[in-house]
Length: 397
Length: 96
Image (cartoon, rainbow over all chains, first blue to last red):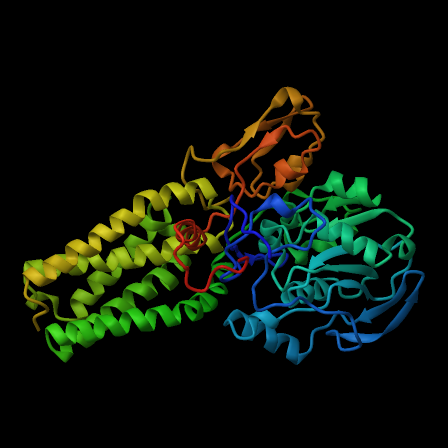
């Protein structure tokens, strides 16, 4: 049995950008230390418990065309264009459907018709990473070395160490890469660097590491640019669209907890007051959750403050105002009004704070500091609003 | 990162300049342009931009960089805290 390591943990994101350029983090995988596994030769202890890994390469790998006979053995030649099922799979993964099985076998692949002198690009075995890379390299002759990251994108896997020195060294040796290519250079995504010690890889395999670009889409330009990274290629972005694509999976992952808590609120308020108040309370909760999970991330750069909790509290405040208008707040007494304007921002703040894991810029120390301040504040706000509600003898109107 | 800035004065990033050999690897791997190279020595240009991903420290061939690396994820930390107090976190615990 593997031991839980103390130290930096967390999913990441990271769900994220995380594919070469996709910032979303893996759900539920909040264990194992960050760089601790990076130098080890042992398979990482981490990865979602549901994934057994990508298996072995067969003719069933996505985009398979034919076998290429190389000095290192048979290598599948794959298409760079994506089919309908690839797009459908990506769409489902974005909604959290079959996401843990969205995986390809690790190993060496050939795009186009590569020779011994053509470049080797390294990526993760999350199928969205694999698809992004092969699509962006359409019309090129390159080797694709896919690491076993248990279906996790590059950045999140690098944070966990599964996209790491140990796995890269192991995969280079397992594929006989030194026999397939005549050069000694591996091209890695920049976001893979938190897991890979380039000098260690060079020492142990003889292959030098070049960190190329953040986004897979910039790879053609990088290759055409004489394999030189421009400042633009290492500039991380978090555009409205990049934030938008992260929202569905957050919604899906929260659904169960939201239904349970919302159900409890519905029953409690109905029991204490009446069914109209119960439904109204449920709506208030649902809106506060959506404000935190959808509005917070989308409006992120424009919301006031640096803290995610403050930003979330602000969206919650907006929702409180809207709820006041929708639910006939003018009929409430002062205690109930205060309770609504305290509790709803606290709920939204909590959910927006959770988006730190999907965002490509908050530091661990910053999130820790924020949580130390924000969690007690949220808890107090909720407790106070319950007392206020009781004092105001439940919702009126 | 353009348009985004997180809490100030919290990053744990430390650079030991005398040890630095000026290879520039930290500039290559940093996703937030925290470092710059001045007279063949790395220098911290923007500490508050650091997200503590640990790429620079791991890739520094002379170990001149130290950072308490990890993923800045609130739900991950809540799960971690719960685990340390032996409370079973919902949906977590893949290593145990």
